[in-house]
Each structure stands twice: as C-alpha cells, then as structure tokens.
Length: 113
Ligand SMILES: [Zn+2]
Image (cartoon, rainbow, N blue to C red):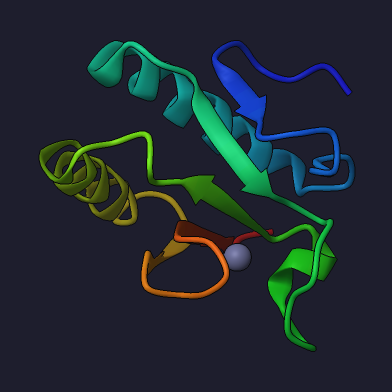
C-alpha cells in the first residue's frame, strides 16, 4: 500500500493494509507533526501483523505500535503530550509500553468508527 508522506514501517513484516481508514488519516497527520517536530519519519513497528494477545485491537486494524527508541526522553515527553492533547478531539487511546517486552514501543488504539 502507498503510505502517507513521512509515515514508514520498521520493516516489511509490518502490515498496514486493513488498518481503519480514519485511523490512517490520523496517523498521516501525526507523521507530518513528527517530521515537523523531530525532522524524522514516524516509524510504525506493528499494525495488523505480529503476535498480539487474543482480543488485541491489532487484529482488527484498530491499533498500531510506534517506535520510541528514535526519541530522547525530552522528545518522547513532547510526543506523549501531542498524542494526549489530540485525544480530546480524536478517538484514540495511548499506552506507553516502553517497558513492555520484547521491544519498547508506544501502542495507539483507535476507538472510533
Ligand atoms: Zn500494540
């Protein structure tokens, strides 16, 4: 699939086909902000692919994981504020899973239509 500008996948195992269209629009906006703030692309490390717990919204195309190791603590803090602020207008839920094995990441869920 053609990805929005500044949105990239970590590798070719990451599947974004079938991710909710409105969620993808939101991620496209986020990617632009990511580029503006940090000068780098927003890296998705998991979409519909991968091993996720039963009932995970990943399987439904309603969750993605974002890379966190590309940001220093200050940048991560800013990014969390951007996401949290946007949650007032956009139906997302954000989980800081930097301590979650096997790889640290930010889990973002879409709770809209
Ligand atoms: Zn996840």
